[in-house]
Amino acid sequence: MKESAWFNEFKRYLTEEPVPGIDFSKSREAICEKLEKRTVDRSARLRSKRLLVAAAVVACLVAYPVYALTYSYFRELKNSNDNIQVKFQTPTDEIRQLIEDKAAGDAYIESNFGEILRERYETLQPGEAEKIIVRDPEGDGKKFFTSVLSRPQYVDSLDAFADGLAGKEGFGSFRPAMELPGGFRFEKGVYYYTGDYYMTEDEMEALMAEAERNGQNYAVKQITHTDEIERVVTCYKNELDEGATLSVHVQYNSFDTYILPEGSEAEELDLNGIGIVAYGLPDKDGNFTRKAYNLVANDMFYLFQFSKDIGNDSATEIISAFIGLQ
Image 1 (cartoon, rainbow, N blue to C red):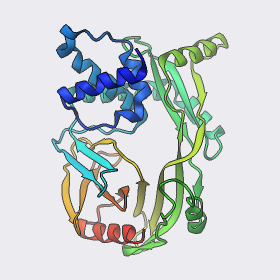
Image 2: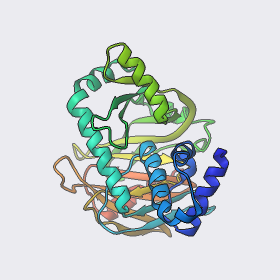
Image 3: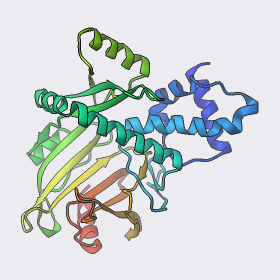
Image 4: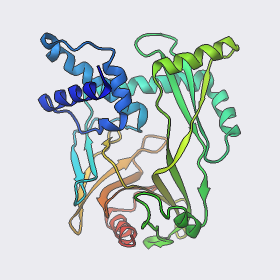
């Protein structure tokens, strides 16, 4: 069956039994790869729905950062043209299990290949990325664990950073502020480009087999980036409060489902008619001393991450100043 037919079949299942809003088209190839491994029989459709949904979620988890959540919360944000849609939600049991499995894989790689990862990271040039592939020692279900190494290329001049966005799809009119209320001042910016991060199991098997023939127990895929900017991050430091920082993530198209950190309670705020989802971020000790704010405005999706909880009033003043300059 053609990929388009598989994808249409999958969309039919979503219509019959709606699930959290993930833009599965972003991981279409991954979904098709999973669906091809299953035979859809009319008599077994009810039983198959969970498997199909789980397959799509696996694909999305591989491609995008997802955070665990136990607090039941759901929020959908859209811009005026419905071009940007962001949903916040609690995960299903299937998603939670997949997150736990991914965490187990990350722990295994760190425990057994941590030194290799650090050595390889040091060899990367700014802007370069690669994927490390290892075999799952248990061999149950997933055959491989992977870890992506990416070395950002920061730009410490605001003018140079803004000029680098000129002519780029979705970012042509974007120009971040040099200064924001409360003492925040531009420190650096970084562009994140789209790349060929996704790999099928067959592709990973081929790389792994070649590495093993050469006596290595891990394989490496060099990531090739396009010139399409997926998102930008603008970093600020606070001149009045040492240690206080702010990072603003901006992208012009977002149909992702964002799952909030485990134990974090979400708040709904209103900024002149713009809906904001605010929630705590855990520090390395698990304490919710940081805070994040998500919103859609100016045909863009924004994520503001503060290293300290400065209060909603101060945060929304900063957000208003930032998006008001676009």
